[in-house]
Length: 392
Image: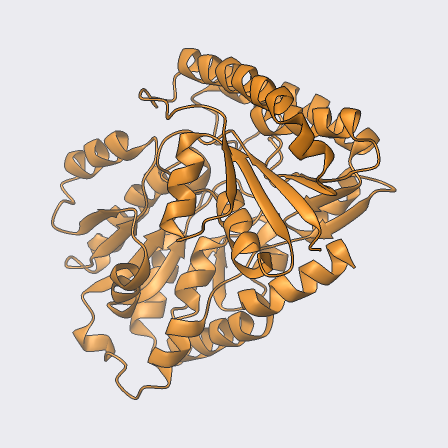
């Protein structure tokens, strides 16, 4: 019989898809023939499974939350609501948990984490795989995405101290996204997940002999990711304003949805960039691939992150990247991505312009990006290696 694993994805709110979501969805996609998978999560989690055309056994904990505005009050309500219904469903389906050899919590947010802790308490011989993918910055940190939301940043930081402590005590394996984070869990078995990219469609395109010429591509750059303060999407508008001073017609495609969508639209309008920036919302499949084909470079302006997979997906189509020089990105993107000192919007814009105007630099960086994705980021290869590390 296949080993049984229950995946806890109970924290989702709204329609956005995080890197942690992508990881657990890809795990199911690549491991469902080897494992018997049950997913434990909310109605929003079911939406994600449907997006990926996945149909594992599913235990629904809660209905979708209608008000996803990221106010402190709404987040507190979400926090307690999901923990409450998660615990109710846990005890309702205790038999399923006790028969599962493995439990994977997809994040360290408490609606996920508390269920993993309960699993370990009631099933001590079970293997708890604890996802710890993003570590909150210290309150007041210079490049914290919570500078304008200090209470939210403080609560996140404090709550994470306790989740890390209990993960250190009770988790069997801790899954992290980048090599530098290993030091946070001394003596524990830690596995660097990092993430991956499905290269099937991009490789078909790149070998087709029908690649769009640079001159015929509509967008100078593309951004893909959640519209969240960590991803630097509001800062990207400042950067693009600087790009248009050098290339007035430069166009930017933004793929993704999230809590900053309204603020993003307001800022684009304020800066009079409506003709330069197109918001596509969440995209998948060929619609997303067509945007990559029609773009020249990928921008990854995250101001605080533990890695970030979204840019890698665009790089698989031969797009070189520009990012800030974050510590995690040194191991995530050692090549194929021009790094910019954090907070230097002008140099970030200059790096974009340099890639667009310098054909030699563009070709070298593009080749490096493709080499990195093919050798390191291919999901088929990564999923196989991770399965061996975790289960064998």
